[in-house]
Length: 123
Image (tube, rainbow, N blue to C red; front, side):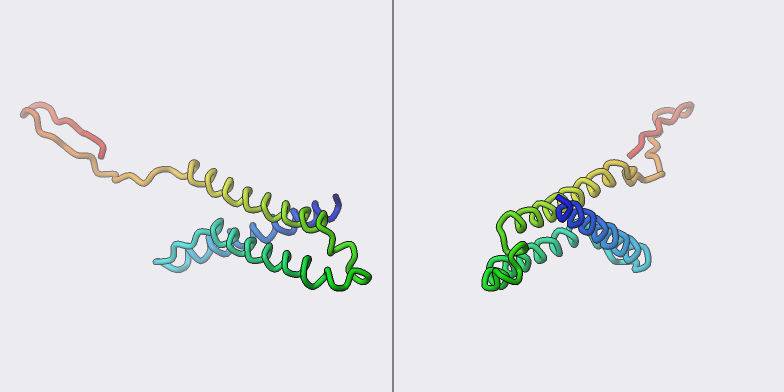
């Protein structure tokens, strides 16, 4: 359980780093539109594939040396930490999208209905 919590905390720290870097890049570069959650999920997926290859191919050949890392239960603990961090990334993206105000045009459409009144309709 300690390894799972360490893996989860380290993945969440990496998520924070990726989100911060993407936000900073989006602020500094005018045309950039980097999505930190998607980048993190891509990196976590690549890490999960490399972890599976290490667990079942490399560590499996050296059971005496890497016994506790080559078990299926240890891999599934690490995989669940990757999946929970990816879910947290998408939840963070969804919450940020809902909290962000919609972009609106401040100019209202003015319809002249009579010489005495004007209707202002937001667009």
